[in-house]
Image (cartoon, rainbow, N blue to C red; front, side, top):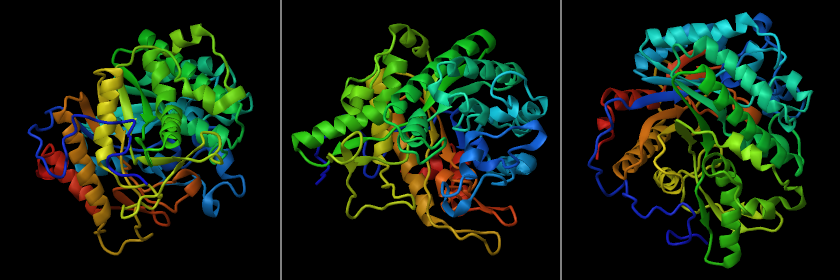
Length: 470
């Protein structure tokens, strides 16, 4: 079984233990303290003002796909309540807010005619944020492909890169005069693993041969959107990936090999092509005959220079070899005496420091934002009064914020941190059963109640990190 001395593909030789050593630095004066959300998870009103369905609306309305039959039809009703939510962000003292744009609001058929009313919503949201002194960070794609494009093959269609670049250019032309931070894709690994390999997420496919094609077309689309931004935009654009340290469960060679496969599949599959210009060799072993040989010209498109990298971090995995675990042949091992969240993710703050150091050591001194970090713990569906205590989430945030401070101490060019999530929301296939928000949402009444974690985070922001203590 795993011990602290076992192999770790994210080994960080200069780690500053956050529980025993006080890091000497403070956070930069311009550090962006923010929260993140995504369109389908909070907006509701998916067909309002000329919008068309996305794959997530279609998926959620398919019986048996989402827990309890939940959908994002109302979610947090943010489409109608955005002004109230932005005012709440202002009261919390947020310096930044990361949100995504619904492609099918802006271009209902995914390509072709623009819907001015849909685009106007994000225009109003951007202005509202700026009026509160909150920096917007816009994600162009957070999993909600227009259903009309899915009917044309979705992320399996080589034309997807052109569709995405044309959509991106429309949004850039509307908002780049005020939005200075852009991200192309959010977590392409989840899009492909959940949507095309295992079928747990939209569009719900389960096909070994489709998965590498979808990943590659996503990366081509990312590159095409970067090219479009260089032609249209004036500020900064990057990519957001979810990273997870992989630790071998033992010193056995088969566990070490499984750990390398798991790391290549989840972490390096997306960053290596974007930042190094090639896929990790382990992917051919993972996919076998389903692994294509890609034209070298594709990598010139994919490897567009980034202004920053967004890192989403939630947990680590301790890995053992498991021949029945399709297709990576690697399975996680639950850790005894460890704390797990409601989504069965181990709470492991040190992994965030390790991850940020690994990015620096493997890919160089790229500016980085932690674009998502948070936890689902049990919160009641309704709140009596104006206070909700969530001590486990407070402790989670405190220790992970100390972890990013340790990364800063060791030279990571970290520009900001975004809690996932501002609001309890529609948690994809889990529906409304898991709550990640630092603000409680009563989904029956839409009442918002800041939790103790919101008050804690607000104190961290107001003190620029001093409230974390030693």
